[in-house]
Amino acid sequence: MAQQSSEGYFFIPHTRPINLAGLLSGNVTDSPHLPLPQRSNPSEVPGFTDIQPERTGTDFGSDTAFKYVSNDHEVLKTCVLAVRLGPLAAAGGGLLPRYADDVLNQAIEWMEFTVGGTVLQRLWGEQIHCLQLRNLIPEDLANAYALQKGGLTAAARAVYAAAASYPQGFWAYLAIPWWWTETANKHWHQYACQRTTRINIHWRGPEYVLQQDNVNQKPTPVLGGAYIQDMYLRFDVSALDTQVKEAYINTVKGFGSAGISTLMTYQQRQENEPIPINSTSTRIQLTNFNKPSSLIMVMVRNANNVLPLYTNNRRFEFLPVSSYYSEGSGHRIQQLITDEYAKYRLAAENFVGNPNVNLYYVLHSDYAEVVQYPMGNLEYGRLQNPTVTLSWDVAIPAAYTADIWATCYNYVKLVIAQDGRSGVALEQPI
Picture 1 (cartoon, one colour):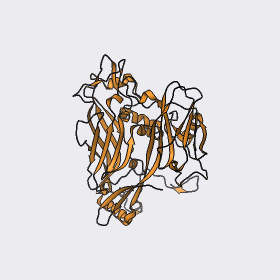
Picture 2 (cartoon, rainbow, N blue to C red):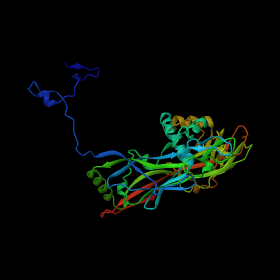
Picture 3 (cartoon, rainbow, N blue to C red):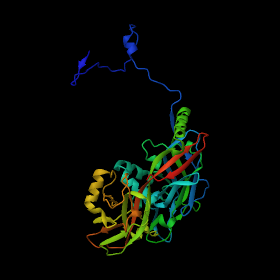
Picture 4 (cartoon, rainbow, N blue to C red):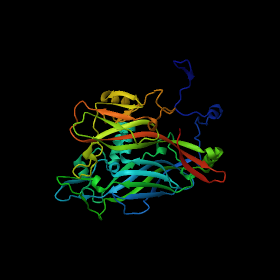
C-alpha cells in the first residue's frame, strides 16, 4: 500500500528488490527481483606482488636494491616494506638488547624510486615518520605503529629481540608514501613506463639502530651474523582489463609531447642546525631551499639523539618551542606564532594527526615585495637573507639541533609516442 512521506513523495514499501518486468507480468509465479549484473572479465582485478632484493645478504650500513618487473597490465596502488629482524644478544654485560623504537623509520637513511635511471622521488626515514604524524588520524597511526613496532617501551622491544620469545626474529612492516600512493585514486600505471624500475634503500649503520642498557656496546645478532634476516617489498596492485589498459595508453598518446602529468610533493631539507645549550632563541638562515616551497616544517631535537649511542638512539623525540617567526627580504614572512596557537591552528585546519607532536610549520603570507606563486609557493632562493627564528621562555638545558624541511612540487610526466615508446621525466610546475 502506498504511503506518503514527510516530503510529499510516495513510495511503495517492500522488502525485496523489484524487477519491473516481474511486477507487470500476469504470471503469478513471477518473483519480483532484480537480476544482478555479471562481468566475466572485470575491469580491474586486485592482488599483491612481492619482490625480493636483487642480491641477498644486505644489512644495516649497506644498500638494498629492488628491481620491479611488472606484467603488461599492472597499476601500483600501495607499497609496503617488510623486514624480518633477527634476535639479539647483549654485549659486554649490557641489559635488554633491542632494536630502536619505530625501527624501520629509524634504520632507513633514505630510499628512492627510479624509472629508467631517473630518480623520481627520494624519501628519508624522518620524513616518513613526520608524514605519518601529520597525515594519519589516531586510529590509523595506532594501526601503523602496530605493524612498524613503533611506540613501544624498551622492555617490550627487548621481548621482540629475545631469542627465547622469537627464535627466528620478528617482522616489521612500513608503508612507503610514494607520491602515487597519495593521489586520489592511488594509481601508477607502471606497465606504461616501459623502463626498468628500481627501489633503492640506504640503511643507517647498526650503531644508529641498536640499543641496550648499562653498557655502550653493540648488541650482536644471534642468527648467522646478520641483523636483517629477510625482506621484501609488497605492492598492492590491480591488473587491468585489456580494453581499460589500451584506453589509458591511447589517452596519453593523444596528448602528444605534452604527455600526462601527476603532481608529486617532495621535500628539500636542511638538517643538524646547532642550537647551543642555555639558548633562549636561535635564528637559522634558510640556505638549502632553491625550489618554490609551499610549507616549511621545523623540528628540534636533542643533539645526543642523532649521535650513535647504544644506550640512547632515539631520533623521534622533538622539543617544543615557545614561539617562532620567519623573515625574508626585510619582511616578516610569518608573524610570531606561539606553540599553543600553532598547534591549535594545525589541529583545527589541516593537521589530522596527533596535535601534541612538536612539529612546527612556517605559514607563508602575502607581501608585494615577496615572490609568490599561484600554488601558494614561495621561492626562498629569491629572497634576501631568509630566516626562521625559534624562541624559548626558559633557557634550553642541553645542546639541540634543528632540522628544517621544505615541501615542494614536481610533476612526473609520462609521454607515450605513437609507436608505443614511452618516457618519464620530472618537471617543475612553475
